[in-house]
Amino acid sequence: LREKMASVSEDDLSCPICQDIFKDPVVLSCSHSFCKDCLQTWWRGNQAKQCPVCKARSQTSDPPRNLVLKNLCELFVQKRDQRASAEPESRCSLHGEKLKLFCLDHQQFRPIDEAALDLKGELQKSLKPLQDKLKVFKQVKENCDQTAEHIKVQARHTEKQIREQFKKLHLFLEEEEEARISALKEEEEQKSQMMKEKTAALSKDIAALSDTIRTTEEELRAEDVSFLQNYEAAVKRVQQRPLLEDPQLVSGALIDEAKHLGNLSYNIWNKMKEKVSYTPVVLDPNSAHPELLLSDDLTGVRRGSRMQTRPGSLQRFDSYLAVLGSEGFNSGTHSWDVEVGDNQVWAVGMLADAVQRNIETLPGLFRIVFCDGEYTADSDPDRPATLHVKKQLQRIQVKLDWNRRKLSFSDPDTDTHIHTFTHTFTDRMFPYFNTVTSPCCSSC
Image (cartoon, rainbow, N blue to C red; front, side, top):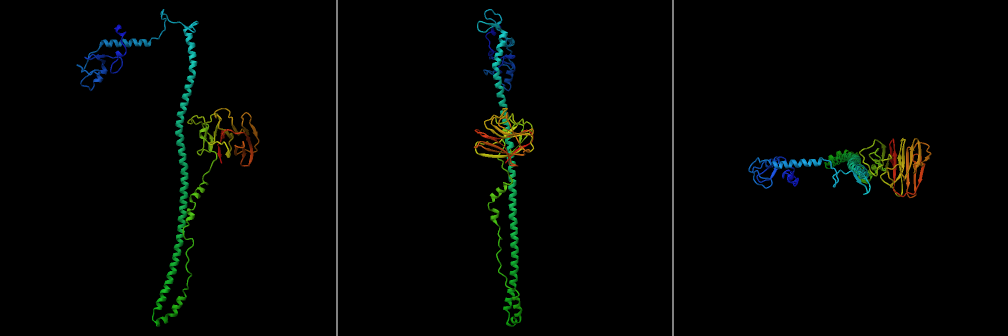
């Protein structure tokens, strides 16, 4: 049996049905062997009891066991398990002894366990960059997954805000439509009533004149004697009905269509401007530090709790509690007011587009800062300049004159200059806002 094992492979000992080593093999009259359970499963619903390989009809539904093949399979499995469980041991091919030394450079020798420990350490060092790189890839993939989910959240939130804004506009238009229709109907009622009264007065005069004319004409058709007898009464009746002035057409009786329809769209739009506001600076949510919360219209910012749902981004601040305006400027003159209110810690200014936002210092940042009751101005955080401000500021006006290389700050409430930076700007400059406590809102 051991001699047979030397030339037998795993394929030779595999069941044609399950492709695994035979378990309790049986042999058919056609000499093909199968696992007993595999064959019985194959024959279910097959009344012909054919061989699964050659299709020959079996002479019995309970074929005999193949004991030789069974023993071969068990021995094969035993040897295979022994080889798998035995720890490989390298030996000298010439002497058969276990190897104990490792040749470093064909001249030096070290114990195998020491050499293996050192080389494993070197290989571990080589593997470390790959492990670190794998962590980076996993982190980026996790961020991509978070970003994909956040995109959906952003889309739903933005859609909701759009619909709410249009609801307000629709409501305004509906109210304006109703007001104008009501004004039209009111004018219609007034002028219809005026014409009704005019018509009633004319009808009354017509009836009176008609009655006098009819009676007098009857007198004229009477016999001479009767006419002469009633003449004085007839003359008196005619004279008592003096001729009225000719009736005039009513002035302004028609609907004033020009008043209702003239420049209708423009007038509604002009009135709508009183209901809406324009903000020269709109905040960019994708740049906001995770702890900052923006208002629905993206004109205000305040500090909240860290928003775990916001994915990391190259655009987003991580070291600074800051947010940028959505639009940058690389030419021209631009200005806006910032309401800081009673906020006890804030910074307002502009940041160059090329600056990395997650570093500890921000080159290209020009700002004024309020902290611990003191106002400072800096383009270099290590060298801030103290600003002398007489009263606590509630609003800051920021004015950028990109072409003239000036960035100025003033108090719009008192029209007082605070500070001006002079710098040759080369990058696109973005409005910058930093708040730690209370709301800090940008507005026109």
